[in-house]
Length: 311
Image 1: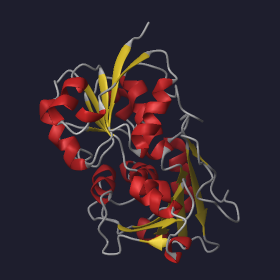
Image 2: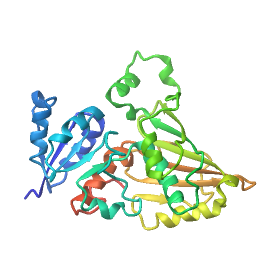
Image 3: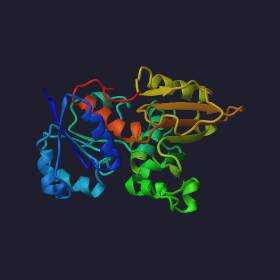
Image 4: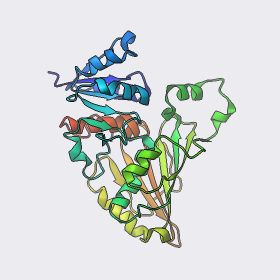
């Protein structure tokens, strides 16, 4: 017998398709659908959402904002867009941040974190919250992602047999230092300043690596203290693993966790002990989007947190 009515609004996009595929294999859900003709009709979409126990919004920001005033308060919403990640009344859905897992059990409005933001926040937020990294720190962040994060049009460009030679090379973007994930990176970490963020997309499908370099003289704590703090913060987590300080391979491929919903944290320190590198590795389609959304849904519905995840 079906227990929950679930609707994925925007199930034709990359994230929506992944979520829909995950839910289809689970017997506890009745998946609601909408006709192709009604997919762009906000009233029709809202009507289906309001029949559900929980709905995923896998939509552009404007479409997510447009439908929310029509949604009944009792319908629980997981928004995978950027629209509500720093909005009042919305819970930021990163269960591993202390206090969030319990809040998810009763939350009605949850914003699923961005992929790059997940990589950055899992590294920085615990250190700020534990008082080991000053909120006024001037941080920089480098991120490398596969092209699946570019959505349908970006994927089509990379897979086009007649594509330009530029797609053979890593392509830094957001070179004006503006990116849609920056507000949540600052707000959720409690930083006084936006980090300098340099994302790069490369010619492989999925997987992401985010790095944050630190000059330890400006931090006031040793690499050993920071690494130990991250290990303690995430102790016992099933989705996030923190490797011991210095346990880094000669090469760390960004697609290491492709197809999985986990996230791994590495830390390294320079021989003189003055510089440190914080590194997170994840699948941008897993813990960076659909896997994170399913993890939040499980907690909201009182189910096993990792049900339907690939660990």
